[in-house]
Length: 193
Image (cartoon, rainbow, N blue to C red; front, side):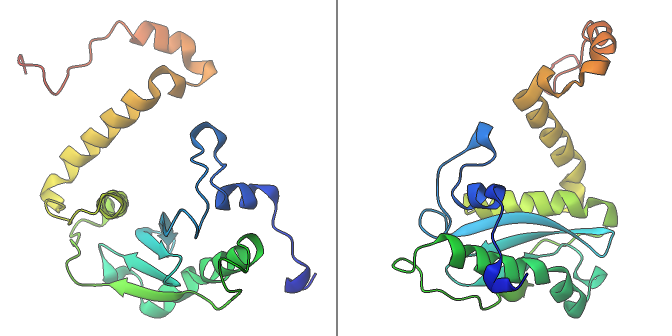
């Protein structure tokens, strides 16, 4: 099948129209209501980076806590599918009266100024998540450093648990969980610690 005959699956359309995932659908359409997409990308089979995909600017900004892990050429290769599929989705799903049809690949920009760097390679995933959080909130990367990673991990784990609670327990572990819920988990606010 040639590119002109390609049809996106329904799940792609639902993403672009803000209808998926259904339990958290915002019903905001790319380009019309949404200017930027944020994503974590696993590159080089061992490293996480954050992406800020500027739909109207036709660029992907890469936030990388350890830029020496992946060369610019390798990063371009890792991002190739996104650089092609996002413009194709926009062409297919956004009316020409709103967006001029263009399947030009998105440009790549590796952001190097004012980006916190990571000395411990095991924390690149947390850095990527925190970059996205800061970008989405319009905040600087102040306080994002190796010394704060353990506290940020604990905070994220607590926030995830608060969000999903018992829903995160697989059915085959419910017996183990019923015994484990009698265990008191100390709170970060517990004064006896």
